[in-house]
Structures are given as C-alpha cells and as structure tokens.
Amino acid sequence: MSRYLGQRIGERDAVISGIGRSAVGRKLGRTGLSLTVESALQAIDDAGLSRDDIDGLATYPGLMNASPGMSPCGVGDVQDALRLKLNWYSGGPEVPAQLGAVFNAVAAVSAGFANHVLVYRTVTESSAQTATRRASVVGSGADRVGGIMQWMVPFHAVSAANWVGVYAQRYMHDYGLTRAQLGQIPLNQRRHAALYDKAIFRDPLTMDDYLGARMVSYPLGLYDCDIPCDGSCALIVSRADAAPDLKQVVRIEAIGSALTGRNSWDQRSDLTETAAHDCTPMMWARTDLTIDDVDTVQLYDGFSFLTITWLEALGLFPKGEAGPWLEGGEARIGIGGQIPLNTNGGQLSGGRLHGYGYLYEACAQLRGEATGRQVAGAEVAVVGAGGGPLGGCMLLTKDR
Amino acid sequence: MTFQPLPEVTDDTVAFWTGGADGQLHIHRCRSCRTWFHPPAPVCPQCLSTDVGAEVASGRATVRGFTINVQPWAPDMVVPYVVAVVALDDAPGVQLTTRLVDVSPEAVRVGLPVEVTFVAADDIYLPLFRPVSS
Image (cartoon, rainbow over the protein chains, first blue to last red):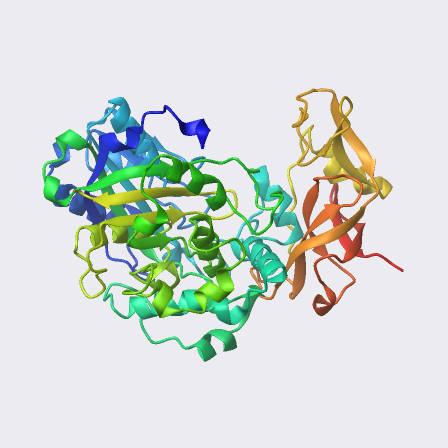
C-alpha cells in the first residue's frame, strides 16, 4: 500500500517490557482501583522497574461513570493512588478500539514524551450487573441519546449483540455460513479455557450445547456472547533501549490503527466487514512478515462473529469462506493447529477483559510462559481488538 | 411505561427526528452535487459544499441485514422484535438502522421491500419500517 511508503516504523522504538493481570472473575466485589493496583504493580515488577521509573500512563476508554463497570478507574485515580510522576498521560474512548491506549503509549515513547508507560484496562462489569441493569446496554437511563448511538438505540438496537447480529446475519445470507460453523469459535475457546486455570468458564461445551442454547439476537445465541467480568490487565510500554530485561521483551513489529470506512455500525457499504478490514492492511504494509509467519492469533471475540471478521481481514481465508475453513475445528484454530486462536479461552470463556486479555495472552505465548496451553515455538503473534467501526491490531514478536 | 429511549435533537438532526410529523422521511442532501447522505451533517461528504439541507425521500427501502432480538434488555421491553439495516431506494448510499413492524420475524429476509411508518414519542417521530403493502 503506497500510502505507507517512506514512513518511519516508529512502533519499533517501543517494546512491551512487562505484563500484569489481576484476579479475574465474576462479582469479585472489589473496586476498579483495587484491581488496577494489583495488575499495575505486577506489570511494573515484571518489567524489572520501580514505581519511580513510570513516567507515562494510558488507559482505554478513560473513566466512564455513566456506564457502570465499563471503566471504573481513570488515569487520575491511578496517578494519585500510586503518586506517579508523569511526563505524559492519556485516557479516552476515541481511539482505534481498545488497543488504542497502547498505540498512544507507543507513540508517546517513540516521540520521546515518556520512557516507561503504564497502560491498563479495568472492568467491573460483572459486579455492576444487576437483575434490571446491564453495563453493556445503552439507553436504559433517562437521558436522551446522542452521538452514533442515537442512530441505533431509539430503534431498540441497544446491545452490541444487535449490531453484530446484523453483520452475522448478512454474512450468513451472502456466504452460507451456518450456526454450526460459527459455533467452532466458542467451542475452540472453551477447549482452551479448560487448559488455563484462570479462565472463568472451563466446563466442556459441545456442539449440541451450543446449538441448543437460547437465542439472544438471532443469529447470535448465548454462547456467541462473551462474559461480563471483573478484572484488570496492565502492561509497560518502554523505550526499546531502556527496557531492563531484554530477554523477556515483546517487540512491536507493526500496528494497524486505520479507519478508512464509515465511523458507524450501520453505514458500511459491505455489512459483512468491520474496521478490522481497515486496520489489517495498514499493519501488513508496515512489515515484511506475512500471515504465514504468524504462530498464534488472539482476536476479539466479544461476539463469536467478530472473530470471523478478524480471521478474514488477516487473510487466513478468501473473503466469504469462513464457514468451510472453520469446519476444520481444532486442526485449524486449536493449539497445535494451523493457527492457534485465543489460547486463553478468549473473552467467550475467559471473561470480557475488553481487548487486553488478548494482549496479555500474546505476550505470555511469546515469552513461553503459557503453561498448559503453550504454542510450541511461538515467535510471532497478532492481536486484534474491536468490532464495527472500532478496530486496532498489533503484530508482536519475541525478542530475536 | 414501555421502553423507548429517545435521541437528542440538534440543528443538524431536527428534520430527521421531527420531520415525520408530516408523514414524510427527511434525509440530508447536497444542494450543489445532489448527493444524499446520512447521518445529517453541515457539509456534503462528496463535494464538501456546505449548502446542504434535509429533503423529502420516498420512504421506500430494502432490507440489507437484520437481527431478531429475543433478549429482554430492559424490564419494560417487549420481545421479540426485528432490528434491520435498510437501504433507501431513492437515496443511493443512505442506509438506516430501524425496527421493523407489522411483520412476523420469520418473514423477514434480505431484499424485503419496506416503507416508512412513524411512531410519535414526545417531539420525536421515529422512522420505523414495515413491509410494502401490496
């Protein structure tokens, strides 16, 4: 893609020097700040740094009081709790999906604003969910709805299950994808969750269970939807030449942050494509590596169908051919398969850490620390997060 | 009270959200290059002219994709219902998320011809769609 020719690949100035993950579960009864402190201190320690080394702070989507549990802990809370002395910080929702906070941190490091940026994402959506209130449903309050939500919510398209349901239905219509083929995604994630003691749902899931479960928003059923959880992930983005322990750093080979289609869930000219199809070409244009070099993919599965958009956008199969490809099941996407997918159980079985669980898992795989679920010889990983108009992806490599 | 969130109204969106009072669908259009566009904005996305405004569209549309919502997301919500993305027949490139009414969910398909019908709530006239009466 000529639009990237001649550009500096600034993401290679930065590395992921440390990772942290708090307790993750259902209704943990802890505050967002408590979970964040746990993951943050772990990441700082893992990197071989101290609190005083942290001079940058970034999060997605920033403090959101209006959506209970969605983002209970902003940069201000963390900066003050840890008394960080920051040269740079950023928190907000208008970025290339969940990983946008990481991209901002990488840019800040590359620009010389900071040497070590603590990046975190914290959710308490499980604790926030009550019998009459769901953190993920828009429009249940008394206020009128603005922004892009106004074009969906007044028509009772209140949940992402509705917005993604339209995409999935249209893909099925155009390309013949079946529910059983789609079901390979949640079945795969459940198999992997069984290998990971920190995943939330680990009991075996059969195709009969999947097909027999209640519908949520046709064609998406119960097991096509991820699980609200409480938890926090953190990572340290460091200047490559300032990382204390080069043996464990994860290199950032390329980032895809593009949004070239409509910024909308319902205005794309092809309703089977999402921003994943915008940002993956940018990522591939910034590297000599190809999909054939990738050892594992950790891709957004807030809904099973979104994973299909990522797999397709990355070029794993020709457009429209997700169904037959997925019929390969474990041989395609299992550990030991063609391209191991969501080796920690993803969000479908592991909990909605909202993008950052994938990044944590990719780093664990590249560092060879994915006990019980390790992809043999994993050196290159793709992380992709988002759906609809939101998308961002990263190509990560083991230090070589 | 039935579940019915309502949109904010701004100078840009007032024609779309309240224009249904006269039974017609109002969609933004460029007065210079005549391109229809949505959501309403103060500039034409095609030629960047700021000479734009709402015009009446026929209200005929075609279903492009849909989902049958079964989950009651709020206590006062009536399920199931059909959410669809429809493309306006006479406004190329313009599509809307809407709710389909007067149709059984099993009868909805991609390509179904539909027409606008408005439901009033406060100052808002929500453009819902139903199958074209033959």
